[in-house]
Length: 425
Image 1 (tube, rainbow, N blue to C red):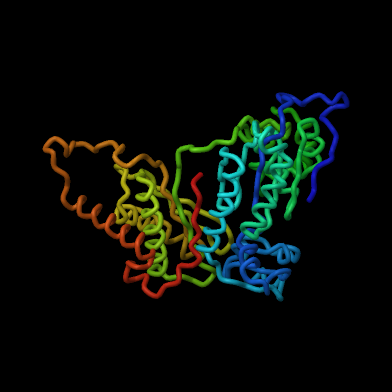
Image 2: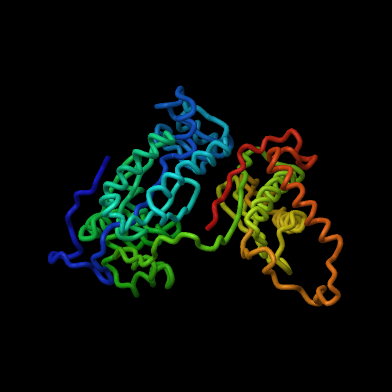
């Protein structure tokens, strides 16, 4: 366990930097370590201590033993095996990962009611106000890590700080299987020596711009004026990064927020795929996300297709429908149209991952009626009613007998085990 004992401030007087206030460090960022690979090592003792790669054509996850050889996600499986020839490659088991995630989030919610999940393997927790019943944030985080290890059998790293941004950075620095507390009067000594890539919003392009300008650390960035930083990386990015460089992040942990998207994705590997194969996989994804949409009594207006290619570039295509819907065939038609538009790009670059997301969500029944209003006659299009009834009936069968009890003929005998859920934004 690593607990920060840093004791510096942005100035010799020890006063807070611009826009900062002295508040207690009560926000936790809990992040499971090498999640998919850790689940595999937990479930198969022979894999413990060995380099493990989850996924074949594309690396979905790598154990820390594999990361030590330079294996990263989402690199190609061939490159990963060149870097680490003795690695064990395992097929992804999404059902096992989802079950483990559910168990871990149960520990989170038993720790505090203020939990904001941001992915399948990480969450923010606000433990402010629990001092009298649960102890200090450090004591709470220590117990949380112990509970996850004992009850779920997985390692987890926790960062503790005054803001969400700093808590997330702390957990990243504290990995693997660590605990790091950034006290409010020591934030900038912790933050400023770190490389600029630790900041949210600094990807490859922004990093290159900053380093070309001679900026390598967050402290060097903080020394720039906001105006000068904006001249280097752009107005919006400059303002955002300048605030983070001075540890300013006003966002609070949010629970019960409106779900903004539902999605899933499928890693295809690097083998060339025919248009028919891609269509089959897209149909499976649509079946999955529309079932989840109806389960939560939602309808969507916008359909998004996300693609990753063999050179690791990405592309996103989207369409907004005339009216909100939860009908599988309507959404599938939109996905097929988006894929058809992208066919030249897919043929030229090779598709290695496809994702489908439904956004612009609303409650079922809240959608705006299209003109002319069918309600004038009190009738509903019989074809639309039949499609909705069919979707609902199929949902009921799958809920009772399993997700593959009824499936499309094109999916018979197909392995869909590497379909990854995308948690709501």
